[in-house]
Image: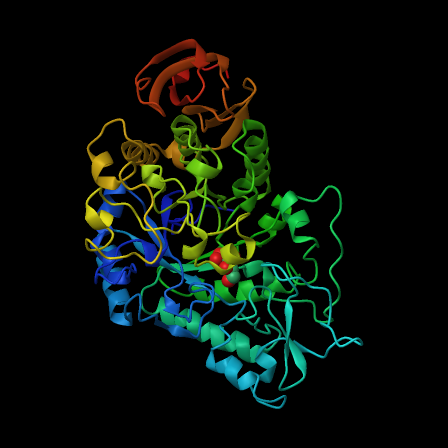
Length: 536
Ligand code: GLC
């Protein structure tokens, strides 16, 4: 299948923004759309091609924007539709695209559709949601567990039936078997595409269709991924149903009908690469599917090398994989992967930004921002409250650290941010921007190198044998990348001739390699190969 020349998303670097935490333009402690617009110069200077915003639609915030009560308006805390239009047009002036988050699996319990649906069994909106009678003992209709823990069903006392919620009970699941729901979402897609939005990241896209017979999920098995085991059941009947592909194809037709084409990126939270690849369809479903195997793996050459190789092989020819070190649901990679070791975080960044496909940075990644410890009394994430102290999502959602000044460039001095500030004195944009050795300069240089070198953007990925703990691969004919990922890993890769085009710890930039490429712990090197003498 030929590469699509319009597929601007397939090899560039994109950037995820959690809008409440990026930049607060009106001093209320909450980031907003005008704040993002004011920071576009940073993003264009960094070299990213587009931004994905976590939900900006109206929400009572039981799950911070992922419980939508109006799909076609902006939440007042974040701005207005006019602010969004201004953001899209200012971004376009800088050649940046704006991607929004679409949440089709569920609504807020406060959405007018659900308020109607629960009013009576005969309400016309009743069938927009998934309702079922109690089981014989009066309990939930089946054994499905919510992804956030506990049963996925809540009894509606008034009408005597249970409604399904794969997440919080404040997030009732829509019934995607209902053609009216499909039609309504066609209109929602068009509403945003017509405003110039470049595409959607689609929340839990693999889950939207459920088994029509609501059969029980099977138990986990020994060989299952640790994340599935943690859930206690295989999400076989409430996830990845074959019929979901029809829904995605329908959306793709709408996205492709626009000029330029709009992009569809799925939150494909699945645990095998074949399943992930299936969501690309025959170039008629998602354009990109996030890869959670990578996020849920340790920073280990063996583990990540296998995931990257398997994914690269599974994704349909002509399509691009997606790589990311973290997002708003997972701890930041400098903490989760590198455990605060700055060299390992740099090595991870070199790896991410030299893989084939599309790379998403999460805001703050460019300065190596670590997680922020949020004390129990300040936790706002409903999952964090339920699972304290084992897991929570606030540590990666704290305000962007723009400077060391009061308010840290996020808000006005003295204003209390909605989540506490992290260690902005040690990690901030202003201090790193002019520093040749900083994480930020490394990020920008790596993006610029990727932009300048077609092999780093689209060259084939070929893994190369390397000492334990080192991940090595070629990109096209022109580059070899070797990164010490495991703690303390070092060694030699022989037969390499060329020059170091960029290095994680900067002092090796420009080094000539004449046969033996030596890596010390924490090294990650991008070698421009001397083409006439490359035996590898
Ligand atoms: C996705 C979102 C997450 C949200 C959940 C329910 O996983 O990324 O933040 O809580 O869906 O909408």
